[in-house]
Image (cartoon, rainbow, N blue to C red):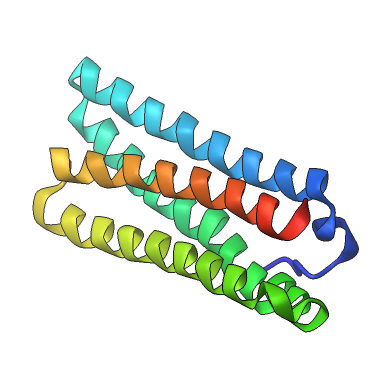
Length: 140
């Protein structure tokens, strides 16, 4: 796991680049999954769904974990007035974790279903809002 307490990540543009990279990768993989479904290739779509869940865990949630362990802790120590913002942003991370866990559970029961697809889209929306808020509250 990367250390997210370094000076580069306290810079808006560097941190924004990480967020944009993570979100664009998730969006691309989601679109690929939808494409397989539209083509009727259910086997490949199921593999793509599993890969997408893994991407959320290894790219986005690992970033969130590292932020909480380093970056947020540093911000809280340097600027105690931002404690409520950090609580809000940590809750966003928790929502992402909950949705990913729900997805894993649903996949065991339903494979690919409208509910599974809704959760993938929910991850995109929550992550986009979270990143925008984090940049505004902590870095601008």
